[in-house]
Image 1 (tube, each protein chain N blue to C red):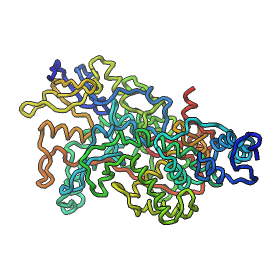
Image 2 (image 1 turned 90 degrees about the vertical axis):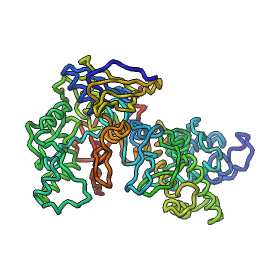
Image 3 (image 1 turned 90 degrees about the horizontal axis):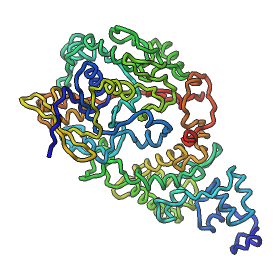
Length: 355
Length: 257
């Protein structure tokens, strides 16, 4: 028996960075927001006295438990999709704050070109540059339109950094200066500068100094302890949703957080979402939460799956290249290099993704 | 030596008894390279004053580690092979202790008895298909089952190809057998031997460098060898230092007063 709940203005599916930002901004504006999070509540105290490589870096304790639920994948349509049985490079988050809790805090802005990659490529190189089977298209929004939101996010999260010499227009500097440079970084900078390159410090959500954001939330100065990726920060020194937007939303009293709440369907009428159905994972009881606005704020694969399960939108068909649900998925790509040096560096110290 | 004093029977009287002979005769531990406090403790128990040399040699006190007994491996023989395998992968040398002295075999035994060995956080439901190389691990075997099968196969190959138990082989022959496993040339059921070897290698390194709370990295000796200071709360004051900063390692126990 599905239990009917009272209608709210907005419901978010998942409460990580995107769910948290939407909850904070709309709750501050006076809307009633409910956040449905399938995982557990967590806070900074969870990470005190647990700087444990085996537990978090090797056994992935903060990631989704794959025994309950995983993804299947294939490289080409004629292969049989098989489940990802254990973790490798591809890692799924879960819990309040989502990946934002155990991320490494690297916070690039896209380049203006990225938003108009199709039209700018054609403009510069001609139609023939894009192969026929390459599903390249413009985003439909431009960097200039998005710039004020980048700026707001960077100020909410206290991002440390310096101007990207190849980046788009910035309405303001980063709210905190770039992070400290290690000898290895200095060597890299000197060498690449001599080679004619323009190295600069990557933007980082590990603030270089203690910072209070416009909502009054404090993010501590990074201690360079190196327990970043796949860990929560024990010092509140990594900008994440649980020290910024989620407490901001909760303080308005317009935001209600429900953990262990797994959304299984977006309800809709005439193509318009009217609410969600979800299960309380602790009791097994199903609920329907009506809302004027439903925001899909879980990981992109879960968002796409939810749309497909709910029969909303047109599924992408790679044969005919029609439809949009599930189209153009792209995982993050990172590049790094390793070398052997005569000198012994303090490589166990550092922050973010690079140690 | 001291049998008259202790009144214990046996043939340990002769001078110059080797550690190896001792270990074989006691039937308690083996592997030839047992180091650290456990050996000291057993020598102390069984041979009375015979302990001094060994204890000094390894620089540890004679601690009897009650927490070191088998949780996963039922047969002692299998555990002996595991010990020798770990020591072959991570041998004692001029840099410091090897896998056995670091507690790695017991670390692995515990890990196999727990979530990791039972794959409790992995997707282990059928249907099982082999898949392509890009689709990753698809076996229905748990890590515990893979270890048990692999460890026994190592000893079988040793016996059939070298006419000796793995624990009695010279290092070069032990390395040759493990190399065959790492290259996927040993025939295992339901899993490749290279997969087994990569798990084995991973577990040995984890046991050597994990926080000592898990029973490996005994006395933080693994960290000390690498100059790794463990779980330090802050490097803020030293992050920009040009030279390598020597620090006494810190374990999680030190954060939990």
